[in-house]
Amino acid sequence: MQRKLEILKREPLVHFSIIALVLFVVAELLIEENGTNYEDTLLISEDILIEHLQFQKKTFNQSFARRYWEGLTQPEKSNLINDYIKEEVLYREALNLGLQKHDQIIRRRLIQKLDYVNGGFSSNTDISEEDLENYFQLHREKYRIEASITFTHVFFDFRRHSKEKLEKTVKQSLNHLIKQSVPFEESALYGDRFIFHRNYVDRTLHLVASHF
Image (cartoon, rainbow, N blue to C red; front, side, top):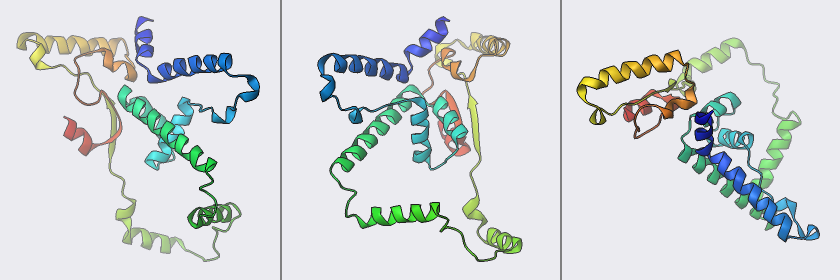
């Protein structure tokens, strides 16, 4: 129970939720109901941030985005939240200023989206399986996805442990982690501080190798 409380204390979403609650109460007390503009309210939740993350990564896979979110460090989560707030504020301000009007780029984009919804994306061209296979073989490098790996680790700094005790400490910690079935997100409670990440979610082998 104490571990969970410690994790919650370090969770940025908890901090933002508390701040949002305080601001809401203050607004309710200081602003008259007739003068309140709820369109200016900015809601933040884990689901909203995961959706934002999918657009950032251009990978529209909710399960991947959720694993990626859970693998982020606290500073990385805070940066993502700040990015979302900045983008949403700028987007709303652009709408308030009417910047979307008389813009040919936005106009064409909206037409493309509506054309897609109405079925304009379909084609009468007959494409055979053989044509698809030939095209794929000629352009297969475009569809190659770099291998990735997901894992968590517990790091021990040899400078903080005597050589005689280090191996014993590592073995005892490993046995404890296995015996207690310590979950992915609690790895930060063990070992020493690591200069990079504790949890790696769908990270490339090249990136992992550069960190280790």
